[in-house]
Length: 276
Image (cartoon, rainbow, N blue to C red; front, side, top):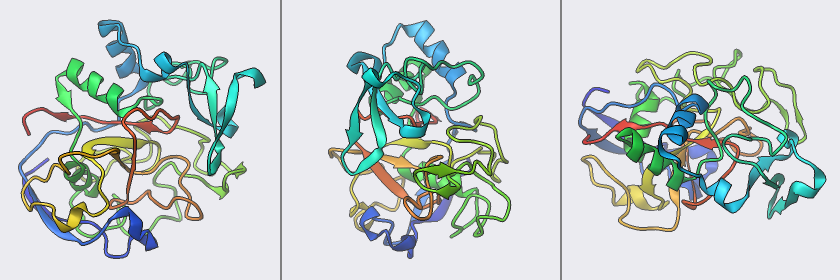
């Protein structure tokens, strides 16, 4: 990624003012190296085999699965997420069993790994000699040099599908017009001008930064790294569950967050080289 100054944020934010997409501000970044894709199941399997690591979902014994993707018996479903009943706690759901104990990774080697917490992603980075991107690095890379654009490819969503998001009536009926109910292979659709595949849609991507919706007002102009502390870590890019009626966050500037130990079937990560 070339050294550059870019405009970070979105003055509109699709009325999601609590997400902290403003004020729009100039950010200067040195050149950095970022993965073309999110870490895949094949990549993560190599990490597990080489390190013996156990993910937090495996340690907990359960993870969050979208209700239409559950592959488990009724006794393995522990309940619904408060305020989001389409998310079910499923015993035996983890990175190698994304729908639950009756699922596996057959045919999914090139899909993004999911059910990884921020802590799991950091463990992978240590093993790989990489790091999670800062939120600023992530947005700069996602934009692909298109200043102010809503999406990695421009300002219009369609009519053709350029990313893996929800189509239909959320959360009960997905027409699968883009071909997928859950994840798509990491190299689907087309890359942006910087060669990044699917920075929006498909899976949320963990960033290094602590979350603060007010951070942009005090962010330094050079290589911002987020607040010094916090309770949640930044997630970027939206996922296969995003829909304009529910979660219109499949945009370059959109922001979200979750606790570092949160594990769910629509979050993964990509990495950057250390030292940038």
